[in-house]
Image 1 (cartoon, helix red, strand yellow):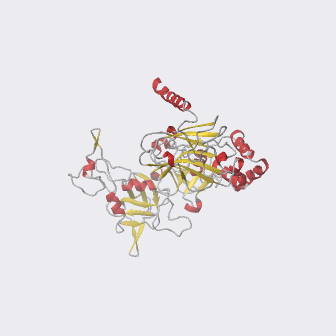
Image 2 (tube, helix red, strand yellow; image 1 turned 90 degrees about the vertical axis):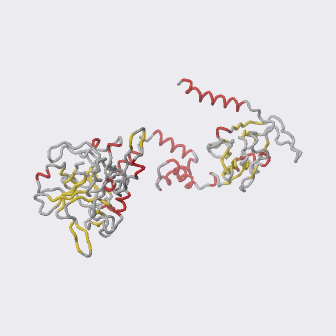
Image 3 (cartoon, helix red, strand yellow; image 1 turned 30 degrees about the vertical axis):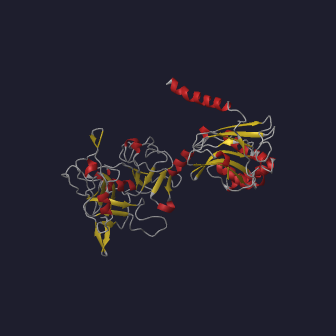
Amino acid sequence: MLRVRMKWPLLLLLLELVHANEPWPHPDALKFTCPDRDFSPQKLTPLSSDRGKGVPKYVLLPTISTSSSEAGSSAEGKLCTLTRLNNKFYIPIGKSYLSHWNDDAWQLSPGRYLSRTSVQCDTTSSDGPTNAITGEPDYLSGEELCQFKLHPLGPADDGYYLQTHKGRGIASTPPRTQAARFLERTTWGATWEEISHLTEEYERDGIMAMAEWAHHQTTALEPTSHRAYFRRRLNPRAVESYLYGIPGPKACEEDARFRRFAFTFKDVQLSRGQDSPAGNDGHPYTVMKIESYAGGGGGKVIKFGGEVRTVTDGPLQYEEDGNLIDLADGDYTICNVHEVADNELGGLPPLTYTFQVLVDTPCTSSYTNRDGLEDNLGDGSIDFENKRVSGRLIRSYDSAACNAKCNDKSKVKLIITGNPTVQLPADDVDLLGTLSWIDLSALAVPEELTILEEERTHESNWLLRRDLDNCFDQNGDEFLDPAGLAFTDLRSTGRGKLKISS
């Protein structure tokens, strides 16, 4: 282990020694100058004559301010780039630019060739070799130049290029634009007031205003957590909390969230077989069960996966040929649902498609009773079912057959009242005693109990704003611990009674 940990520092040290031992200027180095104007990339043709031969190239480049006819600070706003063209793509190698934050010495660009390229900047001590075309030295004594050692070109590579890009420069950029750009890069999103304030300080103090802003952020302000801010205000339901490390608050704790609609998107996935393999004994996918209950006066108990989701004053209904048809007691697959109570969604008229159930035979799986034949009950293919991993048979189920049923308009019915609102069986004491529920009608709205997304989902979602005095429900039982539940989103009957069973 020690040898492995020492390998990289040693390798970096060797690379630095190799680069440091390169002669400067290298006898094979050729000098090029950044183009004066913002034209298309200028190809460094002399470097491309021996592509594919594995010969590294040495290039001498003056900085953007010394290579431009507009020398010195007038070069501000200009950028000179050294790139390599591989087939159709320009890959950055180095750049030189002048700004408030750095001088214009050439810098290596992060990317593909960073580890295979080096750059050294220095001042020449003598004149360079005589150029065969101009008859003049390539460079004079006392010039500040940067030498690049470039990775050899491959047979399919085109060559190396220089290009000059001309911007406005900081000096000619309006202060408000500079302030907005700075805050765009350093905040999660600036307000008009923040931009205006920084603009005023920049007009007074120049670039130091931005330095003072950064200093204030890191020294004078208490650290905050963007994740905590986001989670507190988003507060999503944890539909499978046992899979994650943070299950969320208990029903008696601040930020507990309650909902008034009985069924969720996750229930649709479970009912249709998505993300929920059926048991190997051929049991059906999770169904919605409708039952009559004693003392209900024609009302119904609606269950999902064996648990009570809500009770209704009468049967669920759908429309067919102009008539209202009662949904009989029995098992049903949920094909689609909107996470809103009843049919309320935004400012739209009452919706008729927020809750859809399959009135045909519920989706099932018969994995162990097929006799090697495809029976279209939502199983995987014959070959896939015989797949083994480490010698173990991997049983898998799909939802293709169920999806086909749920896309058949003759078999899917739209419940006219929408996603059932959560209610308690107030007239059935025995049934009420089996549920975990709490009465929050005494809490102040919105100070202690707040409606979430009221404009979109009306009174479908509620948020508890303070800890309750205790963690026991109306039946005297301790609240369920979300960490031990598969489904911890709490269901609410409205501002008053909140049903919190799993």
